[in-house]
Length: 261
Ligand code: UDP
Ligand code: MN
Image (cartoon, rainbow, N blue to C red; front, side):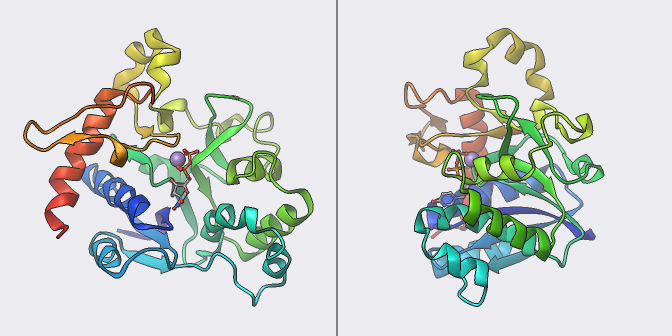
């Protein structure tokens, strides 16, 4: 195991933690050689922490707002941004030289350890506005200085979409034009609705998909699952690919569910 590089994810509650367990299992399944780290907040229960500890190399508790930090004090006046900022705590993981952040609603289908050859900030285009990167998967270099810079920028400029993606795109504003090496192929962060917007491309490149991202309000863990047939019956109109939802549930049932009470 490489000790100074890690995949990092985040959960602020037990349902997102289920996503982290499936994501972590999916990374193990493709034999990653990097550390697995999950950041959690006080909203994750003790039994769920035990599940996370069994799978992840490090479980790091982070505070949404830490009053010992002046930038954070200013943020106390902006509670709307507090959840967003939890993700930025990943820059404080300075025990690592380089990391890849992955949302709890992502799923790895093929080994992606080559991402550690990339530099900060590398990410894939957002399907909705391809001159913005999607912040569900990104390569970064932990640094207290960058963390403070992000918070200071947030206080002065805010986030144009109210979330971490808007703020990160404003902060790393050279991404769209400066260095094509920082553009990850879309296959490293395929929104699971992609087949709907461009079906021929989805068919052509399906076998190249490395990471699926279940964006939107309805997550895989919300979908009805039939434990007799082992099939997920996708809600209509969420746009999620039935095929990818089934992969998520297969990993959940095989690797996660047997350990739950
Ligand atoms: N997240 C969390 N708790 C929340 C909302 C978000 O832990 O209540 C974390 C989780 O890792 C999640 C990420 O923040 O994957 C981004 O949120 P989400 O994936 O729901 O946004 P989307 O990708 O749908 O825009
Ligand atoms: Mn997401």
